[in-house]
Length: 228
Image 1 (cartoon, rainbow, N blue to C red):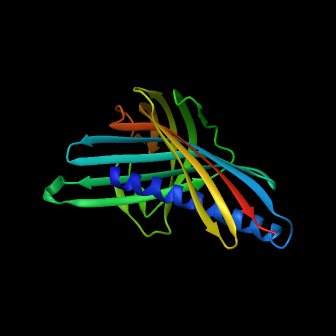
Image 2 (cartoon, rainbow, N blue to C red):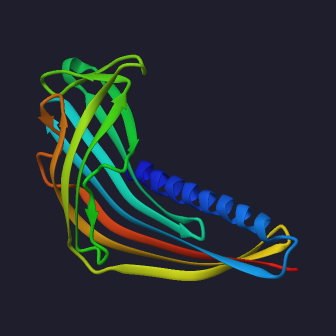
């Protein structure tokens, strides 16, 4: 599951970088053919992730969630967003079988009451995430269904830091047409613990302590400079 979360983090960073590059291309096209000009875009994201595991008889379930608050500021204004991903993996070995269900869902919303402190000390989130491809039963077991059949996962989690912050930063320069882009990015990460509820069909998948959790912050600034 940690590998899948790393993939989500990587995809999120790639998506955000692609968005900022597209924005820079638009700005570059606006200034080409005029006097030498520069424009600055800044991008920031606070992230919280957690993994929970439980076992009841021969039913093993794990739930992995990542949430991110984003903000992109440029001459065009400021855009803020919120994104949440969840993956639920369940293995049922009862009756001598090995039935596995792996489903995931995501949501983008501006209404989620989410707070991730800038110093990465605490975080809290309340959000509903739709998940498709299964139906929850009363005992917490998921039953495989067509992808068109979905159910809501109610998430209400808190995070508290448990370690020291790790940080890394550095510059990066590259060309964009006739323009030059100078980027500077930084990343901070803090180990954490998470508690709360992940409700699926009346069952709390976060009834026990998190098996892994972290808080992170990502910042990038990009200046595009075009010649006469």
